[in-house]
Image (cartoon, rainbow, N blue to C red; front, side, top):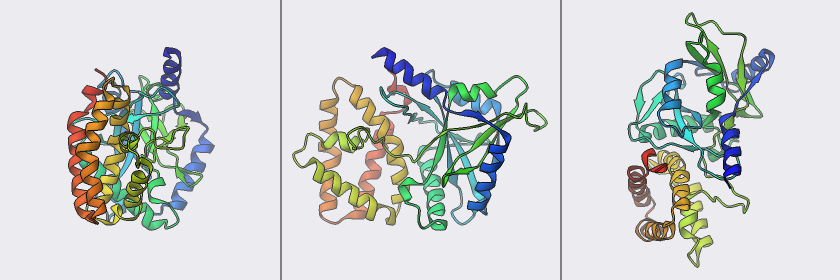
Length: 318
């Protein structure tokens, strides 16, 4: 068991590989073809990346996620630095570390998770509006680089990291490079091959969202699959059209994998999952049955706030 975990964490830490300058130009040119408006790159201070890599010993890397401050202004694009852990025992999987103190944007400003989720939703909705053929839940929201890969760029002469947008196979594929204090690139180093982040719970070998708290909580129910289908229908055909729904969509798929994996690891998970089903899922299910969809959104918001309060990063690694 320990050898499996060690191997996976090593792989996660090394996500991100070097590429040639020609490959970088190809990706950058593709981005300009797909996205005519908005920023094509960001410059991030080396110290800011180091701070996010070292704030907790369990950080496995950083998920750089994309937000839009003003939904009517494509030039208000913002980049968020989301430290991630890897507490899964199979595959290369990462979870956003839940931080009550908030998350940095590319210039060092702090935003709460709720604010990040709102700007994520505004970004995804803007991409969906420009590309009607894209499925909302599959749109790339960010990209993950492993800790070792990032640190390999932070050499002595490095003062900044430039984060460049690129596109590969219809998906965002960024390239990062180190810059010196005068903003000149160092040694023509370019890094790509990240993990794209659609931000949804991982699909396991069974085909189910094994790391989704709702899936875990209803598995003991006789009508578990029926209930899950009802929840999915609400998500796919109602949630995004309701006030605050898109923000909650993003918030849920950041919080849920973390909480689900903690509950799976906890020896008392049967009790905690049963309690969660009784206190949170049952009332939510009744609201859906009665057709009170907007009330269901408010109930989901309260549930996520409770989970965020209880499962911040301090509890993940006790």
